[in-house]
Amino acid sequence: MSRFHVVSPAEVRLRRFLKEKPRIGPSLVFTLLRVSEWAKSIQAGEAENPLRRKLTHSATGSEPIQQIAENLIERASGIERDLLLKSIQELLFYCVNFETNLNLEQIKTRLKGFLDQEKRFAFMQQFLCFYVFNYVSFYTSDSFRAMSSTPQVFEQEMEQVEKICERTVASALEPYEQAESVLDRTAAEELIQKIEQRLRGE
Image (cartoon, rainbow, N blue to C red):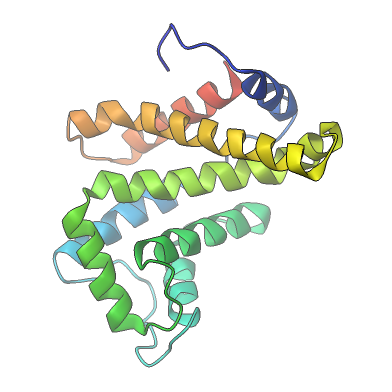
């Protein structure tokens, strides 16, 4: 964030609610690297290369997207795995324009089209936006709900939180995108650390 960034009331509340909550786990780093590798392979027409298991080409609906998500998650369990699985599935549905009756080949074609139009960093940025918001929402939504006078106020609060997450991810990722950096493990760890520090106001 810029040093001139004005902290909003929603950010103050978010930082307070996150204070005693678990930090982002290391499996996000490993999964982010796999997502990046997979995006490169899609662009090269080799979409199955980074996947551990063969996918079912005849499957349609949400099944192939769930298969892809499960294959991309690395070294995760429990809540962390659930958040990663949700975030990758949201990313894939976002990239295929939320169409739910596509088979694997159609999904890969749509993803390649998305990546041809958008840079790979945009793909990773969207994944991180989904994950960070899901992480924040899981750990703070009850606190936001408790302090909201009506359901409408709660929805407005969470909309602000989502925007905070998006801005935080974009600002942390921007230097890597501008430098067209290779996102290796060290860079990924540094990126996630920056995102979390900015979310928590550290």
